[in-house]
Length: 320
Image (cartoon, rainbow, N blue to C red; front, side, top):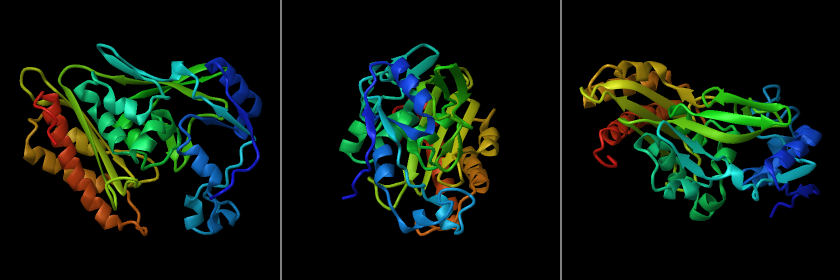
């Protein structure tokens, strides 16, 4: 068992108190929600982390660029008591998801619209039951990993993230929030306080991932698709496709999505779009899978998630 270093533990009673602590300590503080990423990173040790510049583009070895640097925060700021950061509020045109909402709570949300089912799919497939009871959607997104299941889903859903600090609040698009592996636009003194996802009639979405096993695995490839259908003709009015683990950040397959717009949601259309998405992926070869294998999986899962999203948008059940 890895032993944690000495650190100060603080449990603020409000978001304002938490922000004040983050403003004081900056990058020497770490917010703690579920702890399934933060605590692991604080315990993680490897030979590669001893390389100068580990976790940065300046590392001596290519593999050392992709490992996290040793994380030894001075203060850990618990967010577990902040009820205002948890819960899901379903409105007519927007769903607000608290970043402290656990994966289990997302899976069990009874009135999640079909347009947001990709988020439920992503939450349901993550880790073990114990991890899903602890892990939060905000933590998964803020971790900044290109394979993060819910990050891929919310980008496909067109989500916007509200960030707060003692200096005020700002809203950023989920697409563009992650800037590099483990890096985001969030400053050390900020917290994600809300995730807003637009919704409406005739929308559907789906998420799938491929790993070496079904659970307790990081995605080799993850794909989320979202479609909106015209109410009368049933043609695709809008679409988004997000690819995970096939680039340094989750990637929107914009050309593939654009091809589907204005067309009937048919197998031929989805197969053609999937082929385009294959070309938009930017995978690498590593010990978990080759780039060619990842491209193959992108094509298969793009077609399947588009089919499922269209089924859900048309109100014809789960479709999987």
